[in-house]
Image (cartoon, rainbow, N blue to C red; front, side):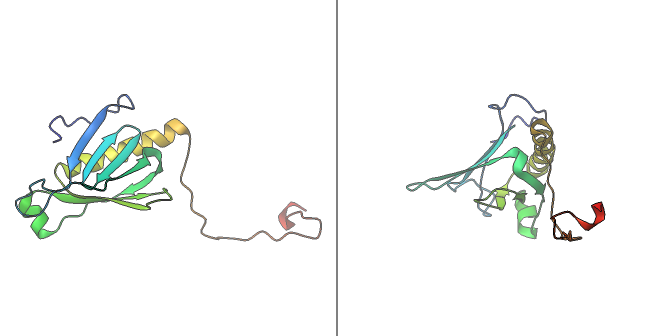
Length: 143
């Protein structure tokens, strides 16, 4: 499915990777889940009779991990969990895909490039300090 493995970021509509979820019996693509990755979008299509299409913009992907079980390694597939800032699905999993290392590497590079292009960044509020306001609404450290 991903015969031309290309790691350069090109046009937004160019399909960089297209993979199918595979079953662990010999790694055959006998499922109805398809993953399509372009420079701007990660799309998951699921189902045969009732279909669901789920998109996540590349700039929302915050972290990518590669996991393989023993059986996945024997068959030559892996699972790629993508941690996103997307409200519909905070963890997208590309389950039992071939070329997983190339896809993971591409997702990391493309998500960083998309964040730079949109000039966005990921921040996390860890509650390191709280600002005390006086009765005028001015923070104490500015007085």
